[in-house]
Length: 146
Image (cartoon, rainbow, N blue to C red):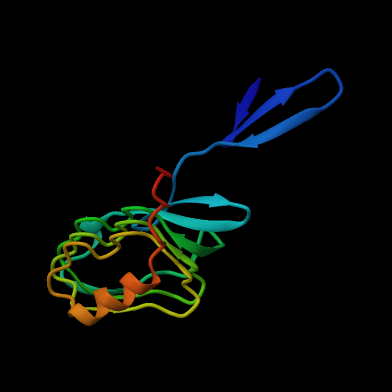
């Protein structure tokens, strides 16, 4: 087995197979992973900015951002406004939970998969935003049969 430049190569007698390592990559304040040529935001270094609005990037490391992962922006108390790009189709559970200064969010129609509690604890968001998101959230798992 050889390891070089983030790849693990397993050598067999007549061929080699390369596997990508599953660790977060970094691009500016973002941490992310890449799967099937698409980026998933896994975290954000909130020390990069103070009270602000953010337009989530649509590319990381040259890959389109398709997913904002679970708890990616959790507890970022100084963000006031978030705009999500059209490239995003999925927002993971609690992605923006406890962002207590958040007052507005722009989510495009491209987002068809929204996890539970994406904006839980965002006490300054208008109730209408949380209600419209609740209607778009993934349904809870079915109850077990009696």
